[in-house]
Image 1 (tube, rainbow, N blue to C red):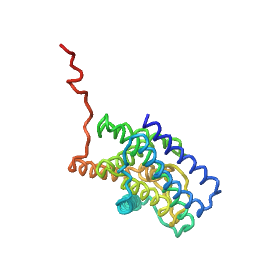
Image 2: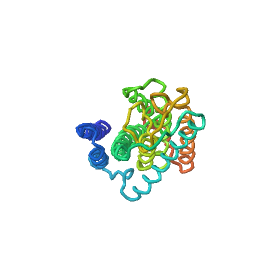
Image 3: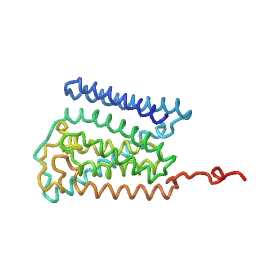
Length: 275
């Protein structure tokens, strides 16, 4: 039941926050403020519900070191998406035509902060963490990455390939980042940096969503497997490749730190019949 209570509490914050943002009518400054407030409230609610249902202090969202971990994660996410865009551009699939909108980028800060925080709390902080206790790291990673990809099928321009790409890229990489660091700030930063770079910097679609224009005015064209088509660069083979490499790096780091959990097995002694 702790999974149900925790998921319901954070999901409620995400829903209320999304409704509040929608009520702004697209005002970028209000969107930024409400998005950041939603992210902060989601963390506070997560801390509260974990304390109530698990009787522990949630070290995975500890305040100490949070800014640095989130900052490094954000830089990593931006750099990773920039590498994807650079690869697409070298193949002639992405071209900058001018400058975009600063207010649009400001609004996207709030949107992507709310999305990154709530999704990481739900999928890594709750679903993966609790599933890993019984199933071990590997099985829990697979079983939580798949639904994370599938929920993106509800987005505009989404298809099965896009959902699979997100499951591999974000589901795998962000879960591996949590396993390697055992805190949620790094995957939150990675998630935010990736999404904000896609929308706020390079003005591309994010998981099929037509987001407001970011800092650059750009055109994407070419084969769908190269550019991701209407789904955005997350549907590009370059994105899958680079994120798989990042996932492998985090898994290696987790293994070296001894943070890969085995699958829990029944105690043989407990299942032995008395003589």
